[in-house]
Length: 475
Image 1 (tube, one colour):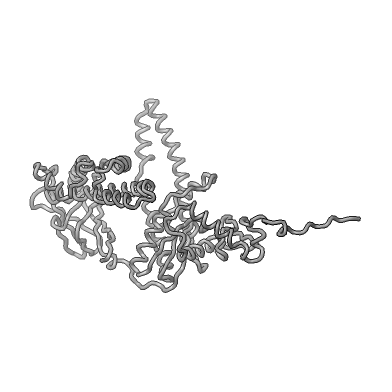
Image 2: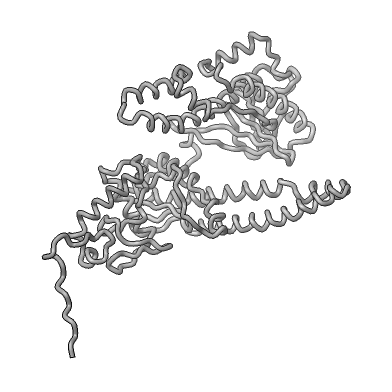
């Protein structure tokens, strides 16, 4: 079954009267959504299905805050889906706690997993306590969205433009929304109201209809994810160069902009403290808004995603099997880095990189394989031993050879794909112990020079292995 992706259509020429009617509907939908979060994000509704909750609301005589019943039911279903997504996300750390608690007891682990999957975690005190800590419900303040199912709107192309006719608050009077282009949306729509007086129509389509599905390559490579460029593969090629410049430029701009906004905010607070409220209000209105900042952030996210998609396509053009690191887990950073370096690295988009590579590989028939990332950048790819030292973009081997650090890591990732002893979820301490043992046992057969300079070289065990003393010079 093909995966779904979101297509966005923008309105064009929407007048103020229609926008106000849509804003009224969106506000009523926001109240329904808030009621759903208030009543259903609790333990009492965990075992109830969305249909059972909807029927219970209708039995109580819910008026959907003046909305048509179709729009009210669609909004409730959307809110219940968000609540369920939050509950499922809370189960991820709970599963980790289960693994730590049931080490060596597979039967107990399976029992707890079963209770958690069937949402019957209230029957076990440990699971109940963990879920109370991780899942705390929530509230909704969204008032700019309208969720419409297929029966609450119609579409047609008229005068070379697509139109959506949405059900209004008055019976028999629909709101005509003009769209750019001639694409007609289908299925459930999500209509977002923007501050510029226009709207966006989001709907789901099969990715095979709108995304590239050309065949992938045939090679098997390992890729190392980086900051200066998106990927470096085990063949020495680099993909997505210029990513670091794009991220650093945006981070530096935000720093300068944030510093200036802080000065303006201090000025606004000083005027307000002195009683000059008119001056303070003008500064807050004209100099401390968020519209330009939000537009720039959205544009930056689009540029970064487009850059990463192009890099992922070049990788998939080359390979049918791609070994890459699983960077979803939290990793301890270096002890000290300059604050500017920390700020720039905080903008690294490793989540977007993983998402784009996975989705593009799936569409084009490639097979991404996740491997354990522990110590892949600290191993000499020529020997597979835990020797040498990485310094910035260079890897200094024990015999004096200098390798490219990213390519060296990509080669280690490819080798990790065929390593049966190091599994994907093996703790990094166990990986380090295993690599140290391999280095200790293999150092005697390493290339010349490694057994003398390697850190894992063992001291001689007997006197016969000691080198002969050098005679002293005598005159």
